[in-house]
Structures are given as structure tokens and as C-alpha cells.
Length: 464
Image (cartoon, rainbow, N blue to C red; front, side, top):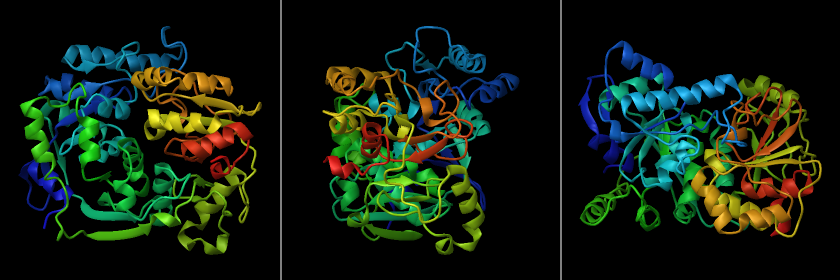
């Protein structure tokens, strides 16, 4: 009668506090430059070492530039953060994939790429989008800086056990609908607080049909509806992806791991605290119109009228439309845009670049559009070249930048100017997220590609 979440969680509980949190053992800890400096300082102050250094992997990603990575970082704050992570990793004996390292990239992209992320694991990082790794049938969630110190010092964390929810997507997706559209649809239906206090398992025919990269996109956005994290039961798709990767088990260890991984599913009679079902046929290519990922519509729908909005949300609704420069009932098709961003831990993988390149092939970037195409890792950048996608994109007027978080957030040089509209494949559209005054429209890679060549919000299905 156990859910997949129960099976993994219960196997990692070291001790429990009656009426309080569990002490949870952590298998894999990812670390970037933004949320870790104070944690390392705490270790120094308390004269502590890292308990199991082999289980922490560090890579700078948020602050790194996506041009001229062979030169010193110009911004002093960014440079200091990146250099501090390098120093801390050296001092405490941690694996570090810095700028120039062939394994550098966004931490939530490189973990799966190299087989560090595996089914049945508990995984944490001082970053809310750690839920990405749940795509492998792992319990993965973001933690705060004090908790980063806790994991470094003990390889454990104190954590109350969340409630469980299953979200089923039944049926087959329509042509032109991507994993990003699934996630944005779910968040719009659930609202940004609809899964607060829950760990979500995604299931159903449409979920099982997704590739691993698509599953990562869905799990990545779990946090945007308030969930603690999201996960998908591992299956043959998962096992085929992990097998042969650098840090995946080999030989007899693989056989033993695989036997365990095949037990990781929710039992037929498992009871969830909440269960929700949606139909894949109801999902179309989507965009956001407001300033949270739940304020979204199908690309051919109109912005909701105020009288359809809950009373408690009307103030934020009005503020969002004012910030975005939109009107109630307005349709956003044909709306002129200024920037397009393909990348981030949500949509910076090779399949995203294939989708974008396939749509723009034979067309050309709109002259007024600034397009930032940013691979999620050095490995993705190499694969783009190996597959000739760089040539296809260059012929269409696009350039590939160097890997990093880039325009997902305004912590590096890739900032959208105030008042400009950006169609972005990233995960958040809060006020100022992509730069002070920037207006972000979240979308999948196909919608971004269509916008990049037309210069306006365009239904990608017209190109398919």
C-alpha cells in the first residue's frame, strides 16, 4: 500500500522526532555559487569538515557569463561568488566543475548527464528547481543555506514528511504540445499554491510517453505550484537513459541497482492524500500573461476577465496586467516581442535545441528580435555542434552562446531591458526576474522558436 514517495523516503529515514521532523539521509548533494558561501563559513566557524565529500558535486551556473568565459568575469559580485565556490570546493575536498571544465553547466543539467542522478536517491541542492531530478524516480528538493551546512556536515537533513499527491495526465498529447505546455497547464489548473505541502507523483499515459528530458521539464516546474517536489516512477525509459553514463553503476553493481530500481513504483492499492486527473487532449501550446507561472493561457485564448478571477487574487491580477502592459480579455497572438530566450534548467537540453532548430529551419530570425540560445551545459554545447544544429541555427540568423543559467534570472550579464517583452523557456516570470522592469512570457521551445522568426507571439502549430 506504499506510494513511490513513501518507499524512497522511508528507506532514508535515520531517526524520527516524535511529532516532529525526520532525520533524512541524503544520497546526492549538488552545490552552486549562490546559496553555499554562508554554509561553508558555518563549517569553518564550528571547525567541521564535510562528512562525505564524494557525495557533493559543485558547479557555478547562476552568475557565469555566456560570452567570453575564457576571460575573467567582469562583474565583481559575480566573480567573487564564482571564485568563492572554487576556493571552498578546494578547501573541503569537493568535486568542482568550474568555468572551462568540460563538465561545467547548470547543476540540474549536468547531474543527470553524467549519471550522478539515479532512481531511488534522495537529492538536495540550495536551489528550488532541484525537483528536476525527480524525473528519475528520486526524492529531490531545494533547501536553504543553513540546511546546506547541515548536509555538508552530516549528510543528513531534518525534514518533515510532506503529504502525497498524484497528478495523472491521461491520453495522448496533440502535435505541437510539449512537456513545458503540460507543466504550465498543470500549474494554471492547480494555481501557484495548489500543491503546497505535497510531494507530487506525475503519472498517466501522457507522462509515461515522455522522454527523460521532457520528464525533467515537468518535474522542474513542480515548485511553481507550491509543491515540495515532483517525481515520476522509473521505467525502461529511465534505465536506458542512465545506463552507461560516467557515474552510473557498472557490471554487477548495475544489475543490483536495476533490480532495486524496478521495485520503485506506487503499489496498485497505494492511497494518496490527494489525486487529480487531467486529459492530455485539453492541453495546447501555452503562454503566460502575468507575473507568476500560474497566470497562463492556451496560446489562442484571451486573457481572463477580472470577474472570472477569485476575489483573493484580484489585486495581484490587476498589478500583473499593469506591469505586463496587457488588458483583460486581450488576445496575445500577434503581440510584438523583443527577446527570445532558449535555455535554463527547464529547457536548456539537447532535445530543446533540436525542437527549436527544426522549427526555424528554412526561416530567418526577425530582425528586431534579440535571441539568446544558451545550452544548459558544455556537453549540450558539444552535442549541438556534433549534430549540426549550430549550422542550421546560424543559417536562420541565430548564435549559440556559452552554457549557464543566463537570462533565467538577472544574476549575470544576460538581462532583458525594462519594458521589453521576452518569450522565455525558463521557469519564472516574476517582476524583475529577467532584469528590472523586464516583461517575461513563459513558453516552451516551439512557441519560443515561432516567436523568434515572426517577431510576435505565434502559434507554433502553424509551422508544423
